[in-house]
Image (tube, rainbow, N blue to C red):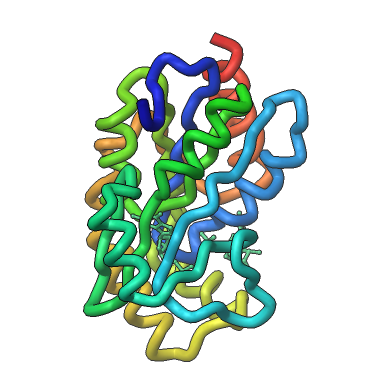
Length: 195
Ligand code: ADP
Ligand code: 5GP
């Protein structure tokens, strides 16, 4: 059976508006080897950016290859965010991690996060990383220096919608002071995996 809910490994889902600090926090967490976490690599039909590699940041498919996987029922969840731009969680990837006994970490958007949580129920911890304010989010996106001003404004507009999903998550961590946010995150994730 796919993505078996009875397997030992647990599921930890991270969602956040872009620029909240999710990547920074998840990368810190992955260094804590005792937590036995493994990152679930998603599939996408967007083109690789910069040094991104197939099988590392994403599994990169063409839109037709992605549709073929949908037809084969290969996804635990997927979304077409706009025409021909798909993101999804491959069942084979989740099986690989949970069968190995590791705990799977997912970095997905708010809708995907709610769908995965609904599928796994108590076996999953859904964590929402919240920016302290929209103004601070803008400052971080500008400071990160990876997006044009237009892209930053579209991320901000989307963030206002994404923030409305926060109450559906098990835990909301406000990433104001990074050390404090990481301390809280480490505590909730450690408790959850050791339960
Ligand atoms: P996301 O993965 O949510 O898009 P990033 O982890 O890339 O966000 O963080 C966005 C930017 O904000 C990065 O430049 C990062 O170094 C910075 N950042 C993350 N957390 C904090 C924080 N608590 N205070 C200040 N800057 C932060
Ligand atoms: P990017 O193109 O910047 O890498 O990612 C864009 C968005 O897609 C992010 O919000 C990211 O969390 C989301 N995303 C990445 N993988 C998945 C996935 O497997 N499923 C869903 N639903 N969203 C994903």
